[in-house]
Amino acid sequence: LRQAMWHAIDTGLVVDKFYYGLIPKGTTMIAPFYGDYHDKTNPGREYDPEKANQLLDEAGYEWREGEKYRREPDGNEFKIIFAAPAGGDTAEPMAKYYIQAWGEVGLHVELLNGRLMEANNFYEMLNSKNDYEADVFLSSFGQFSNPDPRIFNGKDSMFNYPRFQSEESNRLLEAGGSIEAFDKNFLMDVYNQWQELMVEEVPRFPVRYGTRMVAVNNRILNYSIDRAHDLYLKYHEIAVTQDKPFVHGE
Image (cartoon, rainbow, N blue to C red):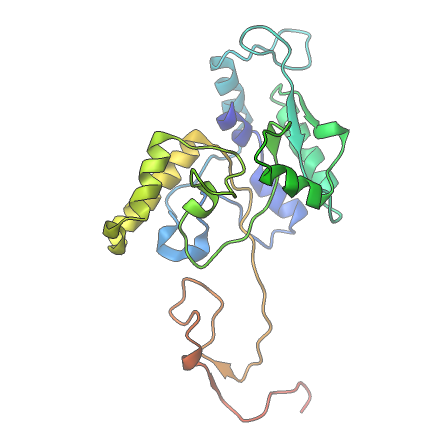
């Protein structure tokens, strides 16, 4: 079911329509700005509604002739509750797109309480130790300088909003924090295996990777906000080409 729900979403369309094509679509759960720790060879799950329908058929979610939506494998009506935060001009049309895309493969998806949630209430719900009513949610999260996936996916992490863990995921995450992980090649291999596992298990899937823009005067040298760049955070390397800032028109 989770695999099918990813295949049903055209992440390229989301990026083009809602983010003006200015950011890359998501593929794995470790973002590209982590450099070598992002598996560039893993395409994630591509938009493929035919594959989504095949997976749902094989899983027993029957789509009976004349009915609008699929049923549970036991024959009961099936409905998925979707939570998403309000905010900005694109929040509502984006949520509607997800519901439409899942509906096109026969999945009946409705917003929690019929509307988008106020953002603070939304994240309070996700952070609650209690189970929440939503089956699926749409959210964004920031990244730290450390690519360690345990921050958002560890079995004891407060940010593990899907509440997902498995024996294999826990094993790989623990290996990524082990003494052996001081070896870069070892760590890259562990993270690649974990990214592949997430594409298979799909506790969540990345839609897009955010970008950050910083204005820097053109007299500045040796400065980078790219975490994968050799100059990232090496402020002692920063230099200037002249003693006064360049001002356009002078």
